[in-house]
Amino acid sequence: MVFIDSKSRTFYLFFAAIFLSEVTLAFEVSEIRTWRAPDHTRVVFDLTGPIKHTLLVLENPDRVVVDLKNTQLKAEFQSLKLDKTPIKKIRSGKRRHGDLRIVLDLNQKVHPRSFFLQSNEKASDRLVVDLFDPVMSPVRSNKKLQDLSSKRDVIIAIDAGHGGEDPGAIGPNGLQEKLVVQRIARNLNKLFDNEKGFTPVLIRDGDYYLSLKRRRQLARQSKADAFISIHADAFKNKNVSGASVYALSTRGASSTAASYLAKRANSADLIGGVSLSDKDNLLASVLTDLSMTATLDASLNLGNRVLNSLSQSSKLHKKSVEQAGFAVLKSPDIPSILIETGFISNPIEAKKLSSRDYQRDMAKNIFRGIVSWFYAQPPPGTYLAWRRDKKIENYTILNGDTLSAIALRFDVPMELIKDLNELKDNSIYAGKVLKIPMDR
Image (cartoon, rainbow, N blue to C red):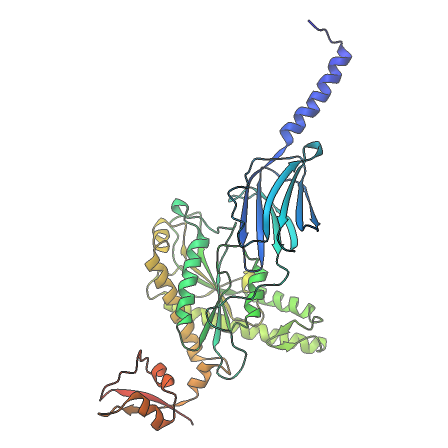
């Protein structure tokens, strides 16, 4: 038997307490996930607590080093999909004082950024590391984007909300908002891709996260004529249901105008294609206010068209366009609306939203509303404006007529006649009345 005097016992208990406190205070990396976006790769570390970290960038070879204070690794790297990312391999090692080092071996140079996200009702604490590509990838589109020239297409920016590690609202049986709205967005994109005079741009074409600011930037980069953000609502009361359409609030428009006015020294920052950098304070203020007022008015009118179209087959939560300060709607010169396609928290509505047929119907109704608004007031210089300004005459098809001969007779492209009359092929028959566009 070993006897320990009181001083020694106090000494041992003190250091034992320190040792045990460090053990109990050690946090864990419980899971690691990766997401690929068009212009960056995101690595997310799920944590059991608020961990302090440092980020290092090393060369020869290229790698990013993440040091985590007082942390243990419980996650595994083997199942991570690293193809199409700049990450060649992920490895880890223990450092002094219980710290953890995670090394991202790279196959190309990147511009890294890291930030910590506090836990919420949907997720634990997280450390996010974004690896931005050296050259930003262009916005993808099924049609070639056209310059702002004669008879250009109307460009529709379609934004599926949330994405990546942000699932959005969660419905019954784990139904995720990000997946539902992505399918609706893709259906809407397909409809516009097949519509003469329109070019769609998918802001998020995959399961990855984009900041609200980046979504607006991509819309402006694509020279969009309208920005459509698609979401699915949620509420603690499961009986609440119905689709809604939002435009920016007046207060949100005022703050956005003030923000752009403050940045007018940046010559690349334009309002409606006009630089503010060379304007005095008063003129810049007037131009900005006019732009925001016109944009908000257009957004409300566009929203009403979409809401009326949605009412044909969907229950509405509110019968008029609502207004709120959604950050994603704060483009100063692009009419922007946010569509809540229904309440994913409502079991009946969630079942509909999970249906591929309902998703297609929802996209069709949104499509009809947008198209009807642009047909009524097309932007100058677009194909729609050119077609509207044409004088239309009716021609009754005679026996022996062919579509090519009619086009030649009136000196009009045959495709334009087909488009105006919604003909799927060159087949015509005697007695049918054709609309023929004529120069005024």
